[in-house]
Image (tube, rainbow, N blue to C red; front, side, top):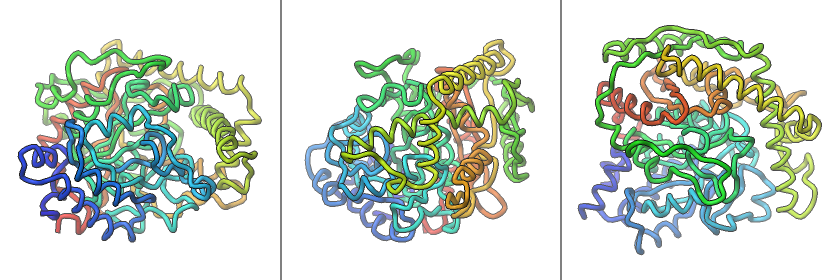
Length: 483
């Protein structure tokens, strides 16, 4: 039964439970068995909670859309009271840091009927687009090729889903951290519109709205159903989004009108794209045209030099790391030092402390200008969606983002190169989805990103479902997963 379940998405697993064909205990036992087999190699789960999961599966579960389905939390952001919370940091693990309360999103996951098996690895404080923290015993590996990165910062969650341990896992995104691992591991990853999903009570709008949380999954319907379940503001949130006109799951079978789509294949940060990802994007463009959509290669209007986009993004990230350092100091009961964190983390903390509030506000203002420029391209009817390769390269080799050289910030430059198409849409706040539409000659997944106007998740889900029907990917799994 366990082998058969691996081929199913979370919706199908929940349907088995609802029909009484399988019990939550059986689903969870199978997931734990797969985790114990795969995790020693992949290093995806950093804090197993198998005993707690077994007990929960045998008890009363909430009657939500995913009742009885095994699930994993990323070790950053959402969580439930009492769970380990280390954020990829050695000191937090040493003091045994745990979640002091249920977050709003964590409680929504629990109320969906999900059974938590543990928490997944993340780079320290979610900084890099790879999951290789000093904290863990080795890097998190990509199930498609264990010499390569699974992405970051939701790399542990993506590796666990791609390996068939669970069908869906929690993820978060502040510069591409849902979409990057989704692309590298062959999954669906949606970054919702800024403030669509509450991060209460921990945060109101982290780094002025750069970050959001949801899941990585195999199917569009799992993502749409989960978005239906969790979207909306919590009391005290600084702002929210307009509610959708109808449930997102209604978009799965809705007819799609022909769309005008802008294809971007030129780096937004002045970096070079690998030919394989450009070719993949153009192959996907042909698939869209076959479905009746119009695709035009296009360049976004400039808002300053490409280098300035990177520098202003780093200013916002550095300010966020500096604020986080102050919070960690309160948690550990003493000032945080360079010995407590990795070199890149400390470099960002110091940069944030040096630059000050004026630089931060200027960076936010420039990003809001970029948002208005992009909105102008879309609102005037020129294009309905933007389309890009999710990443500028194939999944990089482990060790590519080494931060132990003379300048730790060199790792961020490498992050800029790979994430040229992701971070900008955190800055603008627009919803964006990565779909596992293409494969490289080496047999590696290549994600294709689609970006909608603000609040346009409905359009993304409708198009994603259309593409999934025309070019299904659910049975395309990492080597050995379905064997």
